[in-house]
Structure formats: structure tokens, C-alpha cells
Picture 1 (tube, rainbow, N blue to C red):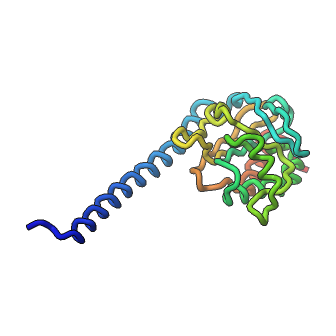
Picture 2: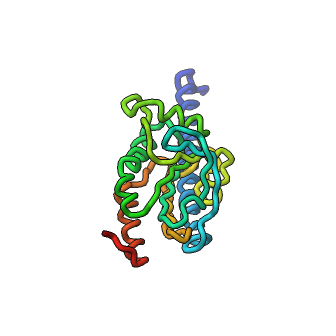
Length: 211
């Protein structure tokens, strides 16, 4: 007996829902695997060795576009924070948290830069919006623009499917060796308190004066 119209519609919708559920699950698995592979690759390929060099268009703290490279931070510890994109609440909270803690990082002879695949113009307009309006307001840390994806790719944080960077935290020492590499999924931010703790531990291990 042929099924009635209502049953046919229900069956079609269920088939479509099941298919989308499988696709969504597969996508989440690929993203999770990509993040895990990125972390593993970092540990194997560059951990403890010279950090991958970069030079990128940058929005400086005074709002002026310029260019910044890894060489500019020789003699200081450096935190490199990767995030997916501007104008998202998670990225806003993450970046403003690091920005508001810059005084503590500076006291440890440590600089902080943030990097995404957004253009420097997107960074500029993001800073033009106040935090209450979904922006980050004025920042005191450099914002690197990785439009070619070369930096994200060299640090193994690029999600090739989306063209966005996973949320990565890297710490480079005064000799520009990579000492810490942590990569999270697109939705899980990097805690600023943990970054500060890691810098303190690195300085202690290096025999640096913490006073």
C-alpha cells in the first residue's frame, strides 16, 4: 500500500535530518582531529627549536598600520595568541583579557601579539567599536594580519576547511626558541592566567630574576 502524503513528508524530513546529523558529526570530528594534529605537529616539528619566523601587516597600539616581525622581539619573551576572527564574543573576551593583563606580562619582560587571518582594516574597525557594542575598544597590543595564512600554517593552527586559525597559544623565549605550544578548537579560548603562569615557569627554568 502506498504511504500517505504526511508519512512520505515525515520520512523525507527524517532522512534529511539524519544526513545532516552525520555530516555535522563528521565536520566536528575533522575539526577536532585537525586541532589535535596541529598540536602534535607543533610538539614534534618545532618545539624547543627556533620559532617559525614571520613578518606581517600589523595594527599598532596607536592605531597606525605597520609591519611587525619576530625579530622585533629579540631579548624578550613573546606570547603569540592566534584566534579565528574579529567581531565574535569569544575572541573579544579572550583578547581583551590579554590586553588588560599587559602590565603583568611587561613586568615579566614579555610581549604579547595577537594574530588572525583578518585584514588590518578589520582589526581597525573592531577597535573602533566599544566593548559594550561587540568591539574590543582601544588595544595596547599589536594585531597581526595573516591574510596569506602563511603564519597560521607555519605554526600548524590553520583550519584549511574554513581558512581560520584555531585558538593557539605559543610562547617564545628571549633566544626566539619555541617553548610552549597549545592549540584549542575554534570555540575554546586560551586563559590569560595560564599564559602568565607559563611565562613565570619559563623564566624560573631559565634562571631569570622574577623580582
